[in-house]
Length: 342
Image 1 (cartoon, rainbow, N blue to C red):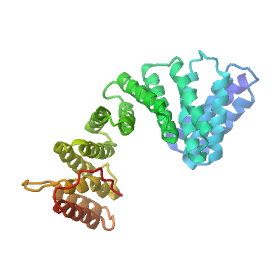
Image 2 (image 1 turned 90 degrees about the horizontal axis):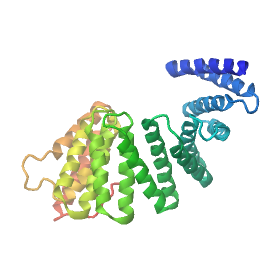
Image 3 (image 1 turned 180 degrees about the horizontal axis):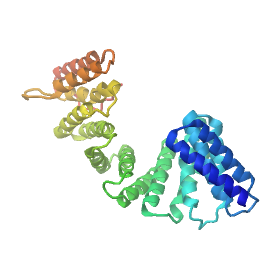
């Protein structure tokens, strides 16, 4: 036991150094020490599940760094073994189980083995049912459950998976106070699930809920704000198609303008955030008869930003989209069908 603990302590120290410095040598050292801790633990040793859990974390870190599928497979196998060895009331069991969910989901995207998807859902369900260290931890378990259920819905079309995903991530949002670092991720997943629910049953209230979640996500000052604004604009355009609410398409254009203005947005993708809004704006009449329309200024800003970043043809591309929007607007009343930009 003493030998295994020594290896575990060395591994933890090496992994901490890797986290601070990013040194691949210290990551390899951590893996070696964690493996030695596992190998030197006798069967049934109470510390074995913890050693396995640490080994899983290090293997997952190497997979994230290098993308070797063998590391992903090994991390999942070690995690499943750790979970099996932990008694149901073990304080760390929920954390191990909830980490297995996204890992199995990641492998599913590579192999398309639906057994991994089912195992991911089962692991996350157990994590939600197990005692959590804190309310924040429980909210994270709910989020992971919603994540894997949404993926299984996308694969199989099982409506009950989507319904449960919505309920789980809504509870995660409700448990997480405004300003918490995790609330943004929860809101984005909630909006995506609500939007998919709308597409299943065409209940406008689901789309309204998605807009509300994205509006909150886009209101904060954070590095992902440009992405949130882009998602909000896209959802507003979808809602506009339902009933010709002009305020929705106006707000969509405004969010595109704000997204373009944010430095956090990648220079090479700024024009793409405008494309959908400009196309819809032109099709629905745009600035016809309205003085001081801001849309040409948005396109000009996109062109300047792209040019300043060295994005070849950025201004020309944005200008072409604006020309397309004007041509659509000039055809007449403009269709209100849900146009998808290609």
